[in-house]
Length: 117
Image (cartoon, rainbow, N blue to C red; front, side, top):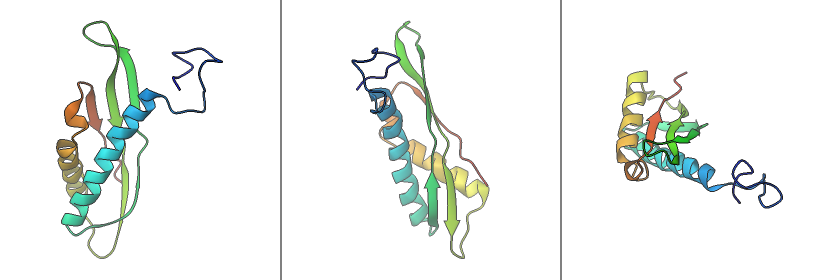
């Protein structure tokens, strides 16, 4: 269902996921899967991974309504004896971002702002 912001009620379902939300979710999911594989390759054990991505709809350079920016805000917690340093986590996120084929396929700016705790 489209968002009630785009298609008025009752022709939309506010409880349904609209295409814009699915777009943001696909970017976040792709990044997550790449990050998990990269962390495992480096010998780190991911205990939890949460993301609260945000997409911004605005007019693009051509004046068309588009998803202009998607910001991922992953927060990752590790377990085990081997713990990455904050620089390691940032590097793994950068590698995941560069590998994500969804992010590589879109014209929107896709940002990754890891939440380091």
